[in-house]
Image (cartoon, rainbow, N blue to C red; front, side, top):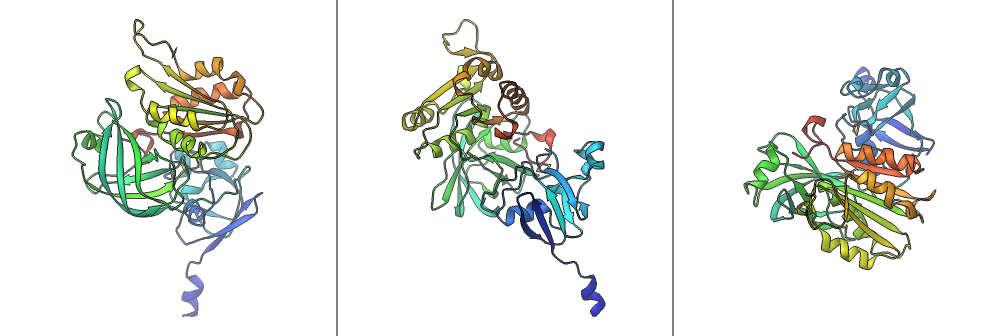
Length: 355
Ligand code: FES
């Protein structure tokens, strides 16, 4: 009996430096899951070992890989004790080095029962979907949930397209874009998921408006508008005096949506607010008088007055857009730590997807 209790796996302690916070991780539990359950803003995005957002240095202790880190990390990183917290279980007490770790309380993710109660066409390929939950969910503007349907393999991740409420939200709204060949969106756009029961896991993600007094540059592409609108509608409720420019990258005028809500944000915003739609595939001979081309090029020309050492940038949309805009704003002098991105991944990136 004494031997059994000696061998019984025990909780381990994870300490994050230089922030100096610590929490317990259960045997077999991922360090990321334990940190999120404790309410810490652990850096993460996909949660399934594909995006690399959660990587950090193991400065002390030993971990077990839940899936092979080598799928995501470079050989050099592996040799330097870089780990993925979403794919690491603790074999001993461990210390992780995460520079810039943000001391913010996030609502720990939980499982909810949901039911799709309404859908509305926003464009030819994007719907607003309303899901009723079995109890109120608390979240930060900009975060996302995972949606699971029993007949469809895997979960899909979609951002809240609404601001949070103090008392929590019993109904949540998501913007869902149809992905060609996608199993979940195929059924949704064929109206086969009306009143469907779904599992909801969340909230998740590190996309929220950081404190500060400097200007805000937001960029949304496609259904990446959802967290940007959520974040700005929430921020529009308070007096902060921060100038803001919002870029919306779309293909044509038919792909623009949510314009009325953006107008309302502009009306309520405490300070200067500029909305800049940018169309990449609008026919040359159309009546469009706004900017054409890709959003990263537009930023070079239109973001000048919003650039300062305190400027924060929030990007959400497909990975190529985010990579291009990140490169542009870094070249414009924005500090890397002030760039916050939420990449919308598809099936080729793993389970955290939107097909
Ligand atoms: Fe860990 Fe994406 S690889 S959160």
